[in-house]
Length: 265
Image (cartoon, rainbow, N blue to C red):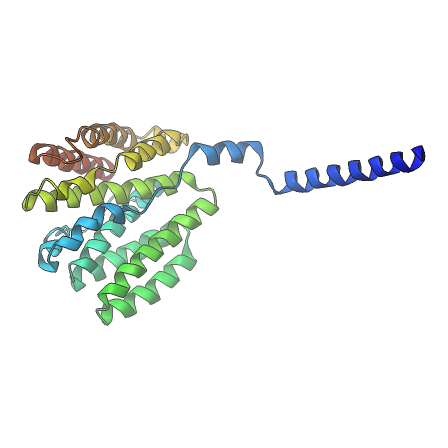
């Protein structure tokens, strides 16, 4: 009887040991786990674009920058630019601006390739080109969001958290900049509430501060951008009953423009 009990205990012990080893094998190593917990996924900047639902296409089109955003070549700048141009592409699609959307999408594909995401370039190019030619605006809006998420997921899955964060910063900075401009043009305190993305900007700054790569953090462009990002966060946190005054909108516009300029220098 004792022998049988000992055998049962031994078998259970072996099974438990095997299960633990199997679980450990599927877990990330300590360095990867620490890095993953230092960064956080963010919602789509389309949350702040809800205000576009209340505007006419011609008004939205006016918010698309006349000159395409370009920076010097560099991985840090490419990631930021891709996020920013994705925000502009959504504006161009909502504004039914075919010419601008063609220019922006072409630049997006170049940047995606420079970030080593050739598969995503191919899928994006075929999908967007056909929809732009057909002026299938609703499908374009969905496709742009899909391809943005596809690129972000790829950067996340490959643990390229630096470029993931920089791309998100670019998208949210441009979204805040353009929406603040649109709301100011036809000021409505109620509509300004869409800019109250406090949690998102908290995460953006937390992720930005989580970047440790010397090549990035030692660049003046990054340091300047982070300083202005913190200042923009302070304005977003200073709302009155969830809304923002024209003066506050101007400060958001100036702060986000300063971030865009920092990455261009």
